[in-house]
Image: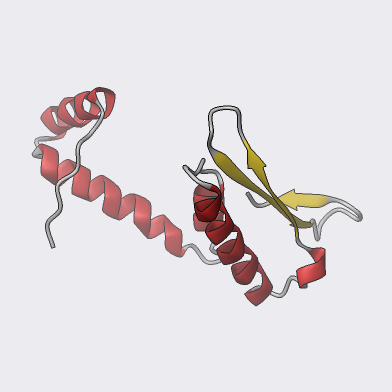
Length: 116
């Protein structure tokens, strides 16, 4: 499948710089980088994908709610009880929304681990 995306000037310059250094075409380098990055989504405990998507700022509340639900379901599958998951959606001054989510820190009595 082929898609066309537009890179920011800053990202295009980085791709050009490191493509030239490595001898990769810009398309090859971008695809290599994306494949390598997305492979980290399959880490054993799946924390990388949770933290990556959980750190995003969303254009609308509906998207933030969808991600919040997705994260909660993933954590419940890992064994966290629904009542132990603390989460909220923040509305930011720039009009974006972000999800904050924490679970009990198993290594610290009474502590919390920030997932998103």
